[in-house]
Length: 114
Image (tube, rainbow, N blue to C red):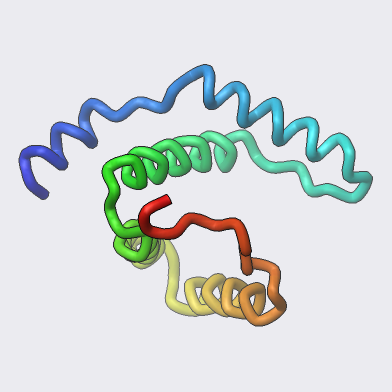
């Protein structure tokens, strides 16, 4: 990792106000859905940090495909160190199935230059 990347990682802290806003939005969305699954607090916290990091990288005008690739690579690295291959395959297959079902298709998503 470069010195600049190490400094950024060391100094990166999620914005508390943004974190609280996202938690409130998630709680409101969950309360409106009768069969909604409760999101664990740890998962919400991780999501807030990742969203903040993505926002920062997009603001730096980095290509979204590279951002996504780095996140996916990092995620797979974490999984490789903490779980077995069969579990990883099941998780990836669930993601593939969601894409094929149209659940992860976003028409108003980020693109380079936006």
